[in-house]
Length: 335
Image (cartoon, rainbow, N blue to C red; front, side):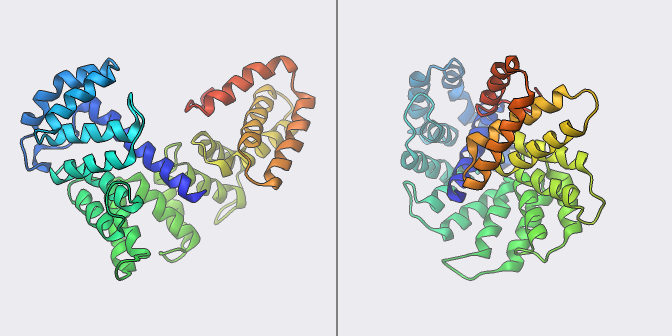
């Protein structure tokens, strides 16, 4: 399960990079490249226009022509086609080979992706040592996530010495540069006392900075401070807010407490109960569709039975559509 989550997060990260890349052409200053970015960008305008029109085959042909001429931006674009499957079947090994070419041409985002390729062993040598090299190089070139990605490898290095102190430093620098990934990791480590000494106050401080639907695991941890009264009074409204924020980001562990707190609020409310009942159904249904343990499945089924005794049947078709939209990357929280 953890491996799948890591792959999913990596895929989403590269998908986001891809869209940002095509929208803004490359959000880095020219000093981040050894070559002239303008010289690379100009020949790609036609291919980018074709891509915007979803003419994938023609766009890929155009990017490949420039990539074969040594254009680093074109090489990164080609890698994204094979990585994200734009108009073609994804081929991770081929994508990684193109990331290698682009990284060698000093494209920072390609360095980050190449490091992930070395961790997976797709199309390049599987090596945490090489992954560390490229994560660190990406960080030096302005990719904030790269620092903590490199730092994490120093905590469990299977090809060299473990260096907790330097790993901590890299992750803290990464977090201070605005990496949501690093901020989330540090908050989690302080919360559980892993790699950093357990410190709920520091965990809470980092969680407040980063918790959002974009960092659903952090939102879940922040909810527990309010739910369990860690260093504060229990506040179920705040707990529900952060649990639902986490659930909106598809953090599966958050579905159950979100559903239970909405149901509890519904049973205690004297008026304006309709929204509470609807939300109880939405998150319980989401839980029932994703439960991975017998206990969670049983809890979801029992709660759903109670809710169905209260909810008008005429609501169900509309609510089920919202659940389906949630799982196709839409936002239940804003519905």
